[in-house]
Amino acid sequence: MPIDRRTFVSAAGAAGLAIATPAAAKPKDSSANLYAILLAIIAAAKRQDADGILSHLSDDIVWQNSSGFAPAVVGKAQVRAAFESIFARVKDDNWRIFDYACSADRLFMEGVDEFIDREGTRVAIPYAGVLEFRGRLITKWREYYDGRLVALAKTSGVPASVDAMIDRTTAK
Image (cartoon, rainbow, N blue to C red):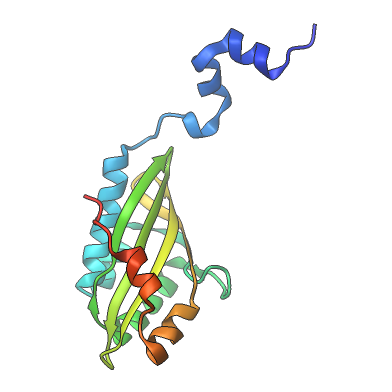
C-alpha cells in the first residue's frame, strides 16, 4: 500500500521528521559559538584588522558581498584586498546585527552596515546574510542588500525609511 505524507508523519512522528529534514539536523557547533565568531569578525572590522577577520575564514572562502551584481571575492588574498579597500574608505564603523538564527553549519543574520566614510558622509545599508561554516571557519559568506543605498546616502543622506528599519536593538 502506498504511503502518503500524512501517513508518514503520523507513523514516524517528530523523529521521522528530524531524519527527513536536513534543517532539523543537530548543529555541529552551538548557535552561540557561531554567533561569537561573527561578533569577533565585526570587532576586527571595527578595528580595521584584516588579519583578525581572516583568522575566521577558510583558505577557500567565497564571499558574495554584492548581492550578486559583482563577482564573488574568492580566497583570503582577495578578501584581504577587499577589506583593505573598505578600510581606506570607512572612518567610523557601526556594523551591527539585529537578529540571527542557526541551522546546522549555517548562521543567518539580519543587520546593518552603518558607517561614516572618510568624507564625513553617513551611510546605512540594511542587509541579510548567510555564513556557512566548516568547523569554526567560514567557507561561504553571502550578503543580500540594495547597493543603491550607498549612492543615495552620498547625494541625499540616509532615507528616513532606512533609519526606521535600523532603529532596533542589537542582538547580544
